[in-house]
Amino acid sequence: MPIRLLSEDVASQIAAGEVVERPASVVKELIENALDAGAKTIAVDVEGGGRTLIRVADDGGGIPASEVELAFARHATSKITSAYDLFSVGTLGFRGEALASIASVSRTSLITRNTAERDGTQIKFEGSAVVSRSLIGAPQGTVVTVENLFFNVPARLKFLKSETSERGHISNLITRYAMAYPSKRFRLNFENRSVFQSSGNGDMREVLTAVYGVEIARQLIEIVADAATEFPAPEPSPPPETDDSDEWPRAFRERPSSNIQVSGFISPPALNRSNRKEITLFVNGRWVQDIRLSTAVMQAYHTMLMVGRFPIAILMLRVPSEDVDVNVHPAKAEVRFRKSDQAFSAVGRAVRRTLISRAPVPQIEPVHWSTGAVGSEQWIVNSEQPPFTDIPPRFEMGSVPPIPTSPSPLYSQTQQQPLPSASVPLLRVIGQIGAAYIVAEGPDGLYLIDQHAAHERVLYEAFSLQRAAADIVSQALLNPVAVEVPPGAAAMLGNQIETLHRIGFSIEPFGGNTFLVRSLPSVLGNVDPARAVRVVVEDFEEDEAPLANEVEARLIARVCKRAAVKAGQVLTSAEQIELVRRLEACQSPRTCPHGRPTMIHLSVETLEKQFGRRG
Ligand code: ADP
Ligand code: MG
Image 1 (cartoon, rainbow, N blue to C red):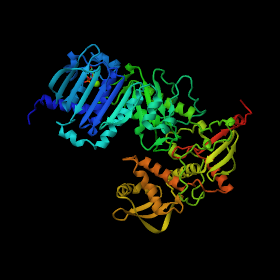
Image 2: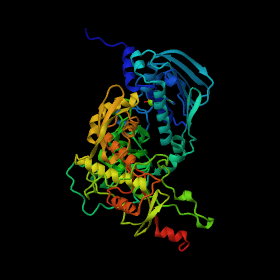
Image 3: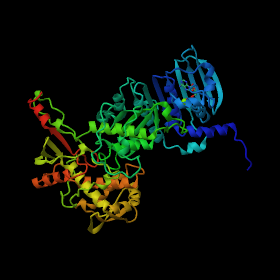
Image 4: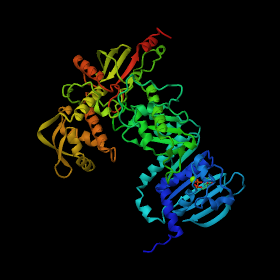
């Protein structure tokens, strides 16, 4: 075939493909335009997952009537004039491509009234061609309506996901922008029904509440500003570091560059997710995907979160615009930092600093002793107790070997020493209360230990060590047991037989959705094999494609959760003491492998206050 120039139409559809991948990309470009136009209120209407209709209305500056056509020309922008301006882009848009791209793959219309004009203008496009233009009465601002997206690009249409999935992308996008711009009012409607709105009063916690609900929003911790709080001095003798300088902790210990500011909210370790999708990063008001920065966030939780669990974080970076190149990604979803190590360490330090100052062993909140009896609810920190109805397996301390003092391999990937605040002092066990908590005395007051969470931690570290030594103790069943699992789980289980084998399960396919279980990790004691397999498959359902080592760590955690002593189980005092000794020996004794606290602490000082001995 000879070389030919593509027609204008085809060329522009190809170009559009880079910018407009799916309905959410249209929404993104339009709300960015609204933000650039100084809008205070942005209303988004979506029908049919964005394929039928996307409408974004703003109350920003509007487009002058004389420039309305130009706005839809490719590479037409009011935001930069020369290549030099790319060094200091202060707006979200700068390429002048979005409106042109959107118009070329849909039926687009726009109504706009510029601040300086009395009349509004309405213009309609059909696949890049203007089909009508008229004067119209309109409030100040701009309304862009995009209908029949990809009507002329069948290839793209075919690749769109279900309406539900596209809606998910759109609501994700809107809620993230709402969090990053708390002083803008956002509203999102699906099929004329309101699914999200923010008030625009500038209170980020209020937006977090609208996005995550009261319970989660209340727990999120605001990033502690730099400067005032100094990062704790490095441990006296840092472990030798042979690996590259990107690794925690050396990179984080560098003085932060004072010109990168990090603000936002993060979750305490106890609040976590099974994937990293809830780590959101905005750089100079722009939502970006940046694996290195999200790695910095995760590394800052080192030793506090189990492998395979991820925090929730919404972080805003302020970087001098000359230090960041925004012109590197077609959909502007990535940026390049001039000093990427500094950005990495600024993020890591901000998160770490916040965690250290705000997420130690949860203290019992001072009770108002003048109001009378101590309400029992004040003592409950960990509300996610496993249900009492779950019949516990035998409490078996002896099924795992004692914990050596070397660091747990799952936690030592980066050779980081445990946090100063992460250990526990030697404790004197006093007794058990409510068949759920162990009461102990330490040099600095009272400790209440959640027996289930503590045992989970103990088993997890022991199991991880066995795993690292490739020495999982497995227990063969007298008679292999056939277990049937749901069809969806069967495929996943089939794929994980290897992994399961490594952690002590010997399972083989037995036709259809049935599997033959020959042995179980001995830590599971005498759990019914069918239940043991259920424990394993439950976790697969959460994530689509988790990494192999994450799967393994998560499975280990699940198995330990299942095997751990439950609340409601009375322990002998020997068992209590043994559990606390083992917990003291753990690398990360303060949280269970899922990140929930194993203990709360009531200091002598708090006691004195409570009893009115101190002011
Ligand atoms: P860019 O945002 O990169 O400049 P766009 O194609 O998104 O490119 O928009 C082209 C131009 O149209 C913008 O530079 C801006 O002047 C104008 N414009 C687009 N949307 C709006 C809006 N909602 N309010 C005011 N002006 C707008
Ligand atoms: Mg734009």
